[in-house]
Length: 334
Image (cartoon, helix red, strand yellow):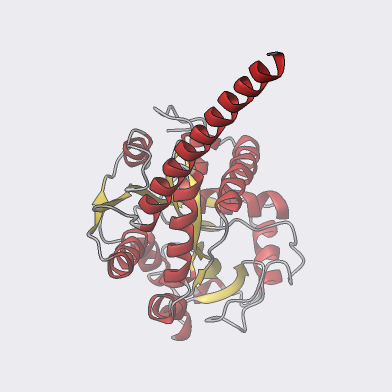
């Protein structure tokens, strides 16, 4: 009788285990089918800046390519304001299904590093993949009288605080942090002048009203080719494909000076790993296509996909770096 009772109990437990395995298999199969059908509806890419700039154009290129790949509608939704935090917050509050994406960049780290009051934490979103890096180049006006980086450094040290440097999108931007970090590395000081964008900054350098700028390669190649701007150094780990004759800061002896201006795709923190993996796979495939990459590379952008984890690490790295630079320079959130 004891054996029979034990056998009955064992059978009951085995039956329960089989039922649990069956339920788990059905759930897993349904989940796999959902991923096979992902996305199951329209996808929205939130861009936290105004239409027309590089970030917006790249997001629209990505949206078009993903729409073709997925055979789904992909909408670009511009939500500018509050140093991009309005758009970021919209994604933070979205359903974590992978159907609402954030196309943002270094500003995500800058906002946290400067201690701006935000309705979210930077960890409320998780990375999918980095998309591009927009390297910067140090340029000067021809009339400044320098044609090499060492001559520029000598001038800065001879005239501390007199040489003017344009800040293409104002105080507390990636360009402001880059200028201050370079000054910290060189032991120099510049007279920083904020601008509302890269185009007006370039115009004032061309007009002789400003001496220098650390500015995106993508917005200056034509002026450099015409010798309207003198390039002194590229801020990247490798030489630029569109400015191959311009040395990097590392080659010039400033080995610890690299700030990357980048863009990436993010989703709400609770988005399942499996969904993030599908998004990473598909977006990486788009970035690797020549139709997508070639026109951007011709402008000086670097296509830079990576793992979801590596993008989260980049954000954390930049928050720490920018916080240190801002503290030394006395940059405060405005």
